[in-house]
Image 1: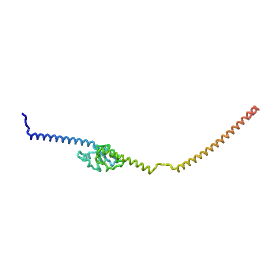
Image 2 (image 1 turned 90 degrees about the horizontal axis):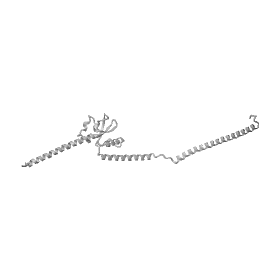
Image 3 (image 1 turned 60 degrees about the vertical axis):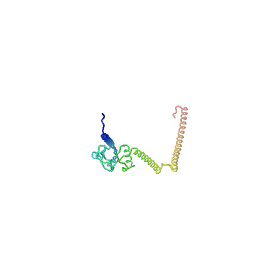
Length: 232
């Protein structure tokens, strides 16, 4: 014989099951959210300004904090309310230095780009968002920044060319240099003519000496043939 369950008892049982499932789902969701938050916190990077060392570095938050400062970064802390001017201890290379935390985020590459901007002076620490923007938005800002810097560089080159034009030689300078070279060339031509005259005189003297030598040699042969015993 089938047992009939009263409607009220069935409704209570169903409600209890729904409440139990809902509670279990809520617990699982909170646990999952807590695990995700812990994972995100473990992967967080921080842009650190070691102001006394005049150095900017991007570090993992868990590596940057010290035992004295870890209380500021509990799971429930709202990092968006962080004061960027707050002086805090930070670890770097096994040492502890006074520092300021300028930004928290998950994208180290974009933080490295921020460091370049801060060093170049294109932005100031006051322009840095405490919480890193969305990756696509930051990438867009980076492209705009690069385009802007490129235009500035092109304009600087144009300004330099306008202020300091390329060195050109005027026709007057060319004429002056040409006249100098021409006068030097004339001097060399005169020297060459003089040397040619001197060489010609030497050749003439050499020819005269050869003629005298030939004449004396001829006379010697004649005398030798006439009287072989006679010494010349």
